[in-house]
Length: 404
Image 1 (tube, helix red, strand yellow):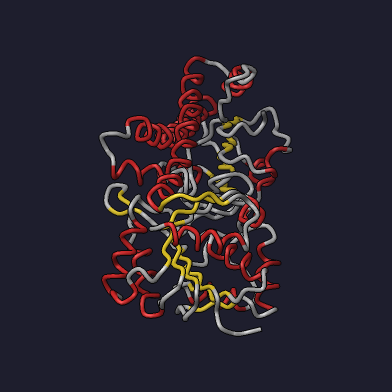
Image 2: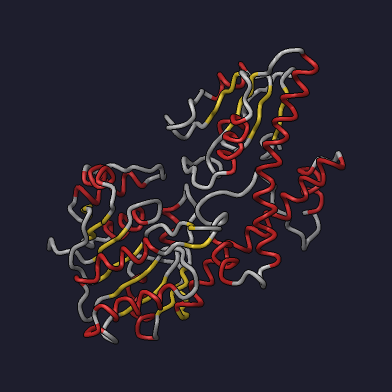
Protein backbone atom coordinates (compact mmCIF):
# COMPACT_ATOMS: atom_id res chain seq x y z
CA UNK A 1 0.00 0.00 0.00
CA UNK A 2 1.35 3.43 -0.94
CA UNK A 3 0.91 6.43 1.32
CA UNK A 4 0.56 8.81 -1.63
CA UNK A 5 -2.95 10.22 -1.93
CA UNK A 6 -4.88 9.23 -5.03
CA UNK A 7 -7.91 11.41 -4.19
CA UNK A 8 -8.09 14.75 -2.37
CA UNK A 9 -11.54 15.55 -1.00
CA UNK A 10 -12.01 19.25 -0.21
CA UNK A 11 -14.85 19.48 2.31
CA UNK A 12 -15.73 16.80 4.86
CA UNK A 13 -19.36 17.59 5.59
CA UNK A 14 -22.60 15.72 4.96
CA UNK A 15 -21.54 14.73 1.42
CA UNK A 16 -17.76 15.02 1.41
CA UNK A 17 -17.11 12.69 4.34
CA UNK A 18 -19.41 9.86 3.16
CA UNK A 19 -17.93 10.15 -0.35
CA UNK A 20 -14.40 10.06 1.03
CA UNK A 21 -15.25 7.01 3.17
CA UNK A 22 -16.85 5.24 0.20
CA UNK A 23 -13.81 5.76 -2.01
CA UNK A 24 -11.43 4.77 0.79
CA UNK A 25 -13.41 1.57 1.38
CA UNK A 26 -12.42 0.59 -2.15
CA UNK A 27 -8.77 0.60 -1.14
CA UNK A 28 -7.98 4.04 -2.54
CA UNK A 29 -5.83 6.52 -0.63
CA UNK A 30 -8.04 9.52 0.22
CA UNK A 31 -6.77 12.74 1.74
CA UNK A 32 -9.71 14.68 3.19
CA UNK A 33 -9.47 18.42 3.77
CA UNK A 34 -11.57 20.56 6.10
CA UNK A 35 -10.97 24.05 7.47
CA UNK A 36 -12.26 23.00 10.91
CA UNK A 37 -9.42 21.47 12.98
CA UNK A 38 -11.95 19.77 15.26
CA UNK A 39 -13.47 17.93 12.28
CA UNK A 40 -10.00 16.84 11.15
CA UNK A 41 -9.09 15.60 14.63
CA UNK A 42 -12.37 13.70 14.95
CA UNK A 43 -11.97 11.92 11.61
CA UNK A 44 -8.33 11.02 12.22
CA UNK A 45 -9.49 9.39 15.46
CA UNK A 46 -11.77 7.18 13.35
CA UNK A 47 -14.91 8.98 14.50
CA UNK A 48 -17.50 11.19 12.80
CA UNK A 49 -18.92 14.64 13.54
CA UNK A 50 -22.29 14.14 11.83
CA UNK A 51 -25.08 11.60 12.20
CA UNK A 52 -25.50 9.24 9.25
CA UNK A 53 -26.29 5.50 9.48
CA UNK A 54 -23.28 3.21 8.88
CA UNK A 55 -20.96 6.18 8.20
CA UNK A 56 -19.25 5.69 11.57
CA UNK A 57 -18.30 2.12 10.65
CA UNK A 58 -17.08 3.12 7.18
CA UNK A 59 -14.89 5.94 8.53
CA UNK A 60 -13.52 3.85 11.38
CA UNK A 61 -12.56 1.05 9.00
CA UNK A 62 -11.01 3.38 6.40
CA UNK A 63 -8.94 5.24 8.99
CA UNK A 64 -7.82 2.04 10.71
CA UNK A 65 -6.65 0.53 7.41
CA UNK A 66 -4.84 3.73 6.52
CA UNK A 67 -6.86 4.63 3.43
CA UNK A 68 -8.44 7.80 4.87
CA UNK A 69 -6.60 10.69 6.45
CA UNK A 70 -7.86 14.20 7.21
CA UNK A 71 -5.96 17.50 7.26
CA UNK A 72 -6.54 21.23 7.01
CA UNK A 73 -4.31 21.39 3.92
CA UNK A 74 -4.51 19.59 0.56
CA UNK A 75 -1.68 17.47 -0.83
CA UNK A 76 -0.67 16.43 -4.32
CA UNK A 77 -2.89 13.76 -5.86
CA UNK A 78 -4.33 12.69 -9.21
CA UNK A 79 -7.97 13.47 -8.49
CA UNK A 80 -9.42 16.51 -6.71
CA UNK A 81 -13.07 16.66 -5.62
CA UNK A 82 -14.57 19.97 -4.45
CA UNK A 83 -17.43 19.32 -2.01
CA UNK A 84 -17.79 22.58 -0.09
CA UNK A 85 -20.85 24.69 0.79
CA UNK A 86 -22.35 27.23 -1.59
CA UNK A 87 -24.22 29.62 0.74
CA UNK A 88 -26.08 32.85 -0.06
CA UNK A 89 -25.02 36.46 -0.09
CA UNK A 90 -27.20 39.52 -0.40
CA UNK A 91 -30.77 38.67 -1.34
CA UNK A 92 -30.63 34.93 -2.00
CA UNK A 93 -27.69 35.24 -4.39
CA UNK A 94 -25.46 32.15 -4.55
CA UNK A 95 -21.97 32.57 -3.14
CA UNK A 96 -19.33 30.45 -4.88
CA UNK A 97 -16.45 31.89 -2.87
CA UNK A 98 -15.94 28.58 -1.01
CA UNK A 99 -15.63 26.74 -4.34
CA UNK A 100 -13.25 29.44 -5.50
CA UNK A 101 -11.17 29.23 -2.30
CA UNK A 102 -11.02 25.42 -2.53
CA UNK A 103 -9.91 25.69 -6.15
CA UNK A 104 -7.20 28.19 -5.27
CA UNK A 105 -6.08 25.84 -2.51
CA UNK A 106 -5.28 23.05 -4.98
CA UNK A 107 -4.00 25.30 -7.78
CA UNK A 108 -0.30 24.91 -6.89
CA UNK A 109 -0.69 21.12 -6.75
CA UNK A 110 -2.32 20.55 -10.13
CA UNK A 111 -0.32 18.82 -12.84
CA UNK A 112 -0.89 17.52 -16.34
CA UNK A 113 -3.44 14.70 -16.49
CA UNK A 114 -5.15 15.48 -13.17
CA UNK A 115 -8.92 15.25 -12.76
CA UNK A 116 -10.71 18.16 -11.05
CA UNK A 117 -14.41 17.65 -10.18
CA UNK A 118 -16.90 19.98 -8.52
CA UNK A 119 -19.70 18.23 -6.61
CA UNK A 120 -20.93 21.32 -4.75
CA UNK A 121 -24.34 22.56 -5.87
CA UNK A 122 -23.45 25.52 -8.06
CA UNK A 123 -24.98 28.14 -10.37
CA UNK A 124 -24.84 27.34 -14.05
CA UNK A 125 -21.44 28.27 -15.42
CA UNK A 126 -19.47 27.71 -12.21
CA UNK A 127 -17.38 24.84 -13.57
CA UNK A 128 -16.33 26.87 -16.59
CA UNK A 129 -15.55 29.84 -14.30
CA UNK A 130 -13.25 27.62 -12.24
CA UNK A 131 -11.65 26.35 -15.44
CA UNK A 132 -10.87 29.93 -16.44
CA UNK A 133 -9.52 30.61 -12.94
CA UNK A 134 -7.24 27.58 -13.08
CA UNK A 135 -5.92 28.30 -16.56
CA UNK A 136 -5.59 32.00 -15.76
CA UNK A 137 -3.27 31.18 -12.85
CA UNK A 138 -1.65 28.12 -14.46
CA UNK A 139 -1.66 28.81 -18.23
CA UNK A 140 0.86 26.02 -18.84
CA UNK A 141 -1.88 23.52 -17.89
CA UNK A 142 -4.49 24.75 -20.37
CA UNK A 143 -6.02 21.80 -22.19
CA UNK A 144 -3.98 19.36 -20.09
CA UNK A 145 -6.41 18.90 -17.18
CA UNK A 146 -9.74 17.08 -16.98
CA UNK A 147 -12.43 19.31 -15.47
CA UNK A 148 -15.99 18.17 -14.73
CA UNK A 149 -19.11 18.66 -12.64
CA UNK A 150 -20.99 15.82 -10.92
CA UNK A 151 -23.67 16.70 -8.36
CA UNK A 152 -24.68 14.31 -5.61
CA UNK A 153 -28.20 12.85 -5.43
CA UNK A 154 -28.55 11.44 -1.94
CA UNK A 155 -31.12 11.32 0.84
CA UNK A 156 -29.87 12.15 4.34
CA UNK A 157 -30.28 9.03 6.46
CA UNK A 158 -29.49 6.76 3.52
CA UNK A 159 -26.40 8.44 2.08
CA UNK A 160 -23.99 5.51 2.10
CA UNK A 161 -26.38 3.33 0.10
CA UNK A 162 -27.46 6.03 -2.34
CA UNK A 163 -23.91 7.17 -3.10
CA UNK A 164 -23.29 3.72 -4.51
CA UNK A 165 -26.60 2.89 -6.16
CA UNK A 166 -28.05 6.18 -7.44
CA UNK A 167 -27.51 7.28 -11.04
CA UNK A 168 -25.14 10.20 -11.53
CA UNK A 169 -25.15 12.99 -14.11
CA UNK A 170 -21.60 13.89 -15.16
CA UNK A 171 -20.68 16.85 -17.33
CA UNK A 172 -17.19 17.87 -18.36
CA UNK A 173 -15.92 21.03 -19.97
CA UNK A 174 -15.13 18.80 -22.98
CA UNK A 175 -15.80 15.21 -23.98
CA UNK A 176 -12.42 13.99 -22.71
CA UNK A 177 -13.14 15.45 -19.27
CA UNK A 178 -16.59 13.86 -19.18
CA UNK A 179 -15.13 10.45 -20.00
CA UNK A 180 -12.33 10.83 -17.46
CA UNK A 181 -14.88 11.61 -14.74
CA UNK A 182 -17.07 8.70 -15.88
CA UNK A 183 -14.07 6.39 -15.56
CA UNK A 184 -13.39 7.70 -12.04
CA UNK A 185 -16.95 7.29 -10.72
CA UNK A 186 -17.42 3.90 -12.38
CA UNK A 187 -14.97 2.45 -9.87
CA UNK A 188 -17.16 3.45 -6.94
CA UNK A 189 -20.74 3.86 -8.22
CA UNK A 190 -23.08 1.05 -9.30
CA UNK A 191 -25.80 3.37 -10.59
CA UNK A 192 -25.85 4.40 -14.23
CA UNK A 193 -23.52 7.26 -15.17
CA UNK A 194 -25.10 9.71 -17.63
CA UNK A 195 -22.86 11.82 -19.87
CA UNK A 196 -23.58 15.47 -20.59
CA UNK A 197 -21.75 18.81 -20.50
CA UNK A 198 -20.94 20.89 -17.41
CA UNK A 199 -23.70 23.56 -17.73
CA UNK A 200 -26.38 20.91 -18.27
CA UNK A 201 -25.16 18.90 -15.26
CA UNK A 202 -25.20 22.06 -13.13
CA UNK A 203 -28.72 22.94 -14.25
CA UNK A 204 -29.89 19.34 -13.81
CA UNK A 205 -29.10 19.43 -10.09
CA UNK A 206 -30.95 22.72 -9.67
CA UNK A 207 -33.95 21.59 -11.70
CA UNK A 208 -34.35 18.33 -9.77
CA UNK A 209 -34.74 20.12 -6.46
CA UNK A 210 -36.74 23.00 -7.92
CA UNK A 211 -39.24 20.49 -9.29
CA UNK A 212 -39.64 18.95 -5.85
CA UNK A 213 -39.99 22.41 -4.29
CA UNK A 214 -42.83 23.25 -6.69
CA UNK A 215 -44.62 19.99 -5.89
CA UNK A 216 -44.27 20.56 -2.15
CA UNK A 217 -45.53 24.12 -2.56
CA UNK A 218 -48.74 22.79 -4.11
CA UNK A 219 -49.29 20.53 -1.09
CA UNK A 220 -48.45 23.29 1.38
CA UNK A 221 -50.75 25.77 -0.35
CA UNK A 222 -53.47 23.14 -0.35
CA UNK A 223 -53.05 22.66 3.40
CA UNK A 224 -53.61 26.37 4.02
CA UNK A 225 -56.72 26.36 1.82
CA UNK A 226 -58.08 23.28 3.58
CA UNK A 227 -57.53 24.86 6.98
CA UNK A 228 -59.79 27.75 5.94
CA UNK A 229 -62.32 25.40 4.37
CA UNK A 230 -62.35 23.15 7.45
CA UNK A 231 -61.27 20.12 5.40
CA UNK A 232 -58.77 17.49 6.57
CA UNK A 233 -55.97 17.96 4.05
CA UNK A 234 -54.47 14.53 4.75
CA UNK A 235 -57.75 12.77 3.96
CA UNK A 236 -58.27 14.98 0.90
CA UNK A 237 -54.83 14.16 -0.54
CA UNK A 238 -55.29 10.46 0.12
CA UNK A 239 -58.56 10.53 -1.79
CA UNK A 240 -57.21 12.66 -4.66
CA UNK A 241 -54.26 10.29 -5.02
CA UNK A 242 -56.67 7.45 -5.79
CA UNK A 243 -56.78 8.97 -9.28
CA UNK A 244 -54.36 6.95 -11.44
CA UNK A 245 -52.53 10.04 -12.68
CA UNK A 246 -52.50 12.17 -9.51
CA UNK A 247 -49.70 12.02 -6.95
CA UNK A 248 -49.91 14.96 -4.55
CA UNK A 249 -47.13 15.09 -1.96
CA UNK A 250 -47.69 15.49 1.77
CA UNK A 251 -47.65 19.01 3.23
CA UNK A 252 -45.32 20.01 6.03
CA UNK A 253 -44.31 23.09 7.99
CA UNK A 254 -42.21 24.41 5.11
CA UNK A 255 -39.17 23.16 3.22
CA UNK A 256 -35.69 22.82 4.67
CA UNK A 257 -32.30 21.29 4.12
CA UNK A 258 -29.42 22.48 2.01
CA UNK A 259 -30.97 21.35 -1.27
CA UNK A 260 -34.68 21.88 -1.90
CA UNK A 261 -34.88 25.06 0.16
CA UNK A 262 -31.77 26.50 -1.48
CA UNK A 263 -31.24 25.26 -5.04
CA UNK A 264 -34.24 27.02 -6.65
CA UNK A 265 -32.70 30.37 -5.72
CA UNK A 266 -29.70 29.55 -7.89
CA UNK A 267 -32.02 29.60 -10.90
CA UNK A 268 -34.16 32.52 -9.69
CA UNK A 269 -31.05 34.62 -9.12
CA UNK A 270 -29.83 34.18 -12.70
CA UNK A 271 -33.26 34.22 -14.39
CA UNK A 272 -35.51 36.46 -12.23
CA UNK A 273 -37.99 37.32 -15.00
CA UNK A 274 -38.42 33.77 -16.24
CA UNK A 275 -38.87 31.91 -12.93
CA UNK A 276 -42.53 32.66 -12.22
CA UNK A 277 -43.49 29.21 -10.91
CA UNK A 278 -40.13 28.39 -9.29
CA UNK A 279 -39.95 31.76 -7.52
CA UNK A 280 -43.56 31.59 -6.34
CA UNK A 281 -43.06 28.07 -4.99
CA UNK A 282 -40.21 29.37 -2.84
CA UNK A 283 -42.49 32.11 -1.52
CA UNK A 284 -45.28 29.63 -0.73
CA UNK A 285 -42.99 27.24 1.13
CA UNK A 286 -41.38 30.07 3.11
CA UNK A 287 -44.82 31.46 3.94
CA UNK A 288 -45.97 28.07 5.23
CA UNK A 289 -43.42 28.29 8.06
CA UNK A 290 -44.63 31.78 8.98
CA UNK A 291 -48.23 30.54 8.83
CA UNK A 292 -47.44 27.66 11.20
CA UNK A 293 -45.83 30.04 13.69
CA UNK A 294 -48.95 32.22 13.56
CA UNK A 295 -51.17 29.18 14.17
CA UNK A 296 -49.17 28.39 17.32
CA UNK A 297 -49.48 31.99 18.47
CA UNK A 298 -53.25 31.95 17.90
CA UNK A 299 -53.63 28.63 19.75
CA UNK A 300 -51.71 30.10 22.68
CA UNK A 301 -53.98 33.18 22.85
CA UNK A 302 -57.15 31.08 22.55
CA UNK A 303 -55.96 28.86 25.40
CA UNK A 304 -55.31 31.89 27.62
CA UNK A 305 -58.78 33.30 26.93
CA UNK A 306 -60.49 29.98 27.60
CA UNK A 307 -58.46 28.69 30.54
CA UNK A 308 -57.44 31.97 32.13
CA UNK A 309 -53.77 30.98 32.34
CA UNK A 310 -50.72 30.75 30.11
CA UNK A 311 -50.26 27.40 28.36
CA UNK A 312 -47.17 25.22 28.27
CA UNK A 313 -46.13 24.39 24.73
CA UNK A 314 -44.13 21.49 23.27
CA UNK A 315 -42.40 22.11 19.95
CA UNK A 316 -41.81 18.63 18.55
CA UNK A 317 -38.83 18.45 16.19
CA UNK A 318 -36.16 20.81 14.90
CA UNK A 319 -34.56 18.86 12.01
CA UNK A 320 -35.47 19.71 8.43
CA UNK A 321 -36.90 16.21 7.83
CA UNK A 322 -37.74 13.08 9.85
CA UNK A 323 -35.16 10.92 11.63
CA UNK A 324 -32.01 12.97 11.00
CA UNK A 325 -29.95 15.44 13.03
CA UNK A 326 -29.54 18.02 10.24
CA UNK A 327 -31.02 21.42 11.12
CA UNK A 328 -29.82 23.31 8.03
CA UNK A 329 -32.48 25.67 6.65
CA UNK A 330 -34.99 23.87 8.88
CA UNK A 331 -38.50 25.35 8.86
CA UNK A 332 -39.15 23.66 12.23
CA UNK A 333 -36.22 25.53 13.76
CA UNK A 334 -37.48 28.79 12.25
CA UNK A 335 -40.95 28.19 13.70
CA UNK A 336 -39.55 27.41 17.15
CA UNK A 337 -37.47 30.59 17.06
CA UNK A 338 -40.44 32.65 15.84
CA UNK A 339 -42.69 31.30 18.58
CA UNK A 340 -40.10 31.92 21.29
CA UNK A 341 -39.66 35.50 20.09
CA UNK A 342 -43.28 36.07 21.16
CA UNK A 343 -42.87 34.21 24.46
CA UNK A 344 -44.46 35.83 27.50
CA UNK A 345 -43.46 33.66 30.46
CA UNK A 346 -45.08 30.51 29.03
CA UNK A 347 -43.29 27.21 29.57
CA UNK A 348 -41.76 25.86 26.36
CA UNK A 349 -40.42 22.37 25.76
CA UNK A 350 -38.21 22.12 22.68
CA UNK A 351 -37.77 18.55 21.40
CA UNK A 352 -35.29 17.06 18.95
CA UNK A 353 -34.55 13.39 19.69
CA UNK A 354 -31.75 13.16 17.13
CA UNK A 355 -29.40 15.61 18.86
CA UNK A 356 -28.18 15.73 22.45
CA UNK A 357 -27.61 19.46 22.89
CA UNK A 358 -28.18 22.72 21.03
CA UNK A 359 -26.43 26.05 21.39
CA UNK A 360 -29.70 28.04 21.42
CA UNK A 361 -32.48 25.71 22.57
CA UNK A 362 -32.69 23.85 25.85
CA UNK A 363 -33.88 20.41 24.75
CA UNK A 364 -36.45 18.26 26.51
CA UNK A 365 -37.16 14.53 26.22
CA UNK A 366 -40.12 14.00 23.92
CA UNK A 367 -42.15 11.92 26.41
CA UNK A 368 -41.65 14.48 29.14
CA UNK A 369 -42.66 17.29 26.79
CA UNK A 370 -45.91 15.56 25.80
CA UNK A 371 -46.73 14.87 29.43
CA UNK A 372 -46.17 18.45 30.60
CA UNK A 373 -47.44 20.51 27.66
CA UNK A 374 -50.93 21.87 27.18
CA UNK A 375 -50.32 22.49 23.47
CA UNK A 376 -48.35 19.95 21.42
CA UNK A 377 -47.00 21.20 18.09
CA UNK A 378 -45.78 18.48 15.73
CA UNK A 379 -43.27 20.01 13.34
CA UNK A 380 -41.29 16.95 12.18
CA UNK A 381 -42.62 13.39 11.75
CA UNK A 382 -39.86 11.64 13.68
CA UNK A 383 -40.50 7.94 14.30
CA UNK A 384 -40.39 8.52 18.06
CA UNK A 385 -43.49 10.70 17.82
CA UNK A 386 -45.68 8.32 15.83
CA UNK A 387 -46.54 5.91 18.62
CA UNK A 388 -47.11 8.49 21.31
CA UNK A 389 -50.39 8.34 23.16
CA UNK A 390 -51.75 11.87 23.36
CA UNK A 391 -54.22 12.53 26.20
CA UNK A 392 -57.57 13.85 25.03
CA UNK A 393 -57.22 17.08 27.00
CA UNK A 394 -54.17 18.17 25.01
CA UNK A 395 -54.40 20.65 22.15
CA UNK A 396 -52.56 19.24 19.12
CA UNK A 397 -51.30 21.20 16.13
CA UNK A 398 -50.14 18.66 13.57
CA UNK A 399 -48.20 20.29 10.74
CA UNK A 400 -46.58 17.08 9.46
CA UNK A 401 -49.34 14.45 9.46
CA UNK A 402 -47.90 12.59 12.44
CA UNK A 403 -51.11 10.71 13.19
CA UNK A 404 -52.06 9.98 9.59
